[in-house]
Image (cartoon, rainbow, N blue to C red; front, side, top):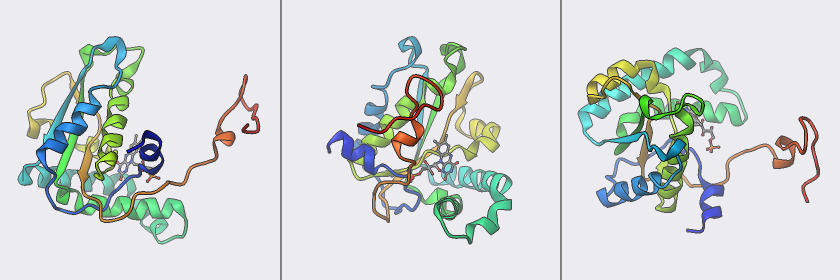
Length: 204
Ligand SMILES: Cc1cc2nc3c(=O)[nH]c(=O)nc-3n(C[C@H](O)[C@H](O)[C@H](O)COP(=O)(O)O)c2cc1C
């Protein structure tokens, strides 16, 4: 798939089939992930692939609890019209079905391998984006999620993640039920300033 087509049609695919993903494809998207840059090329990452049903079930429960704690109050907003309400409904669906995704990928960062100035996220999210684009190219749906962090300690214990290593996000991956497509975004000329804050420019 052409790179721009992948970038322009990469969406948070939260409704996934339970069909398994061939191991070969899991390796393929991970191999794309590790091509990403990291501070000083320290590659402070590890990726935990979770396919074990019981482990996914437990993490799914913690994730749902995180969702309810963080977004429980937004129930009313879900009924509304518009993009934001659609995101909430879709995120609510994922929170209630997370464990059904055939694969979880949990990228981690070793804090000791990261320069304080660049931060941990800077050394993992390029790899995460690579992974999601590579998955998109294979027709696999992914979503970058973070709500398992509400139960980070329990998730780490379950997976035996040592001290000094942080789980950065959780990516459920599987064959999507819906279609890929372009997500709603503000126009580029609205969010771009030229030579100074607030100085917009017509797109040439
Ligand atoms: C830092 C970050 C954290 C996110 N956390 C969650 C999450 O916990 N749960 C979830 O369902 N989606 C999560 N998302 C997905 C966003 O909601 C999604 O990327 C955004 O709505 C755009 O979706 P679209 O590309 O389909 O338009 C997260 C995205 C980012 C970048």
